Image (cartoon, rainbow, N blue to C red; front, side):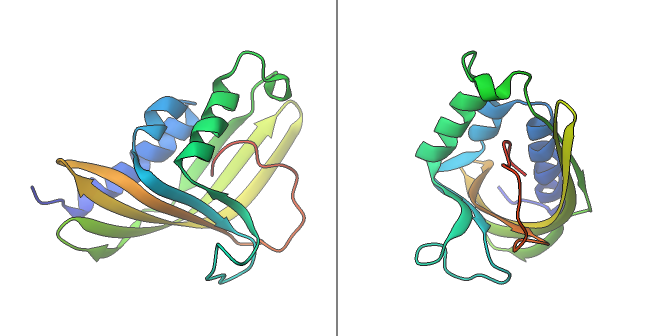
Length: 157
């Protein structure tokens, strides 16, 4: 099966819609078991292991995050945080036989009660074609103002 540019772009739109609608279990199913979600702390950071990151989560940590967000006893999420992604049409940077790279600029809004935070960011998706389905092998979220002080980011840009 070959993947078209439009299918890659639709995949990115579908992913952010899942996050905006709070469909976290469905979102988790998009990931490969060894996938990594990375949000660097520094501009143009190249090393997530030996340098501090805002987030560096493997599947175990992503599952814990989703369990917390879905949990009935998560008091820090009463009422629940909500988010909204406004994305630019993704660029398809690499198209291999079964590996793909996209790059998407977006504005991300996260709100809870009367607090709202707006983040400008760029997301790189490393995607793989596995058994005829696109899956996330890696997601890197670069915040435009990564070196600023933030409140907690509760959800997933």
